[in-house]
Image 1 (cartoon, rainbow over the protein chains, first blue to last red):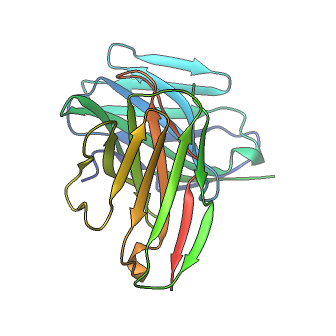
Image 2 (image 1 turned 180 degrees about the horizontal axis):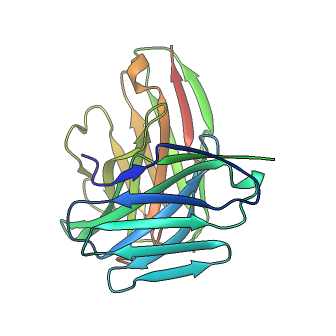
Length: 113
Length: 114
């Protein structure tokens, strides 16, 4: 079953605007990861944030994590048309000695020139 | 990080046949995973491929339908058996370089079953 729920399901913005995507989850985690997927291709890893971290940056990306609310957000600043993709959060679940990922439903982002 | 390749990248198959998907990683890794992404959906874990032992399947997935091999620390295969149109999906393998760290994904295999 899906642990993560993301909103919005779809987001349409203009180039230069900021895009914020949210992810909520249900159980305790060790870390949370964000991925990007372009048009049904493989997943590109964006950021991993650990449960003891509150905020992490990578270029134009900013991820926050609130473990008390079991939620995370991904902010893309100064968006570009090339940012058009689906974005997924994934939480880890240690089970049977290994770390499996449980993915949210994803947010489809469209950035218009 | 890890560089992962998958073969084939896409295929169109007839119902009732089987397809074997290969996943190759450029370094030795302990854990390899297989995911399915149905059209317009998110990713669902099929199984964990363990080197030297049987794969561990998630609820709703069985070995007879999705047999997996893991002959060494850099390679795994997933077979989709006795396919039906409902098996049309993207199948992705991933690897975990170290426990609790980033999982890296292959480019995926897009499967269409007619």
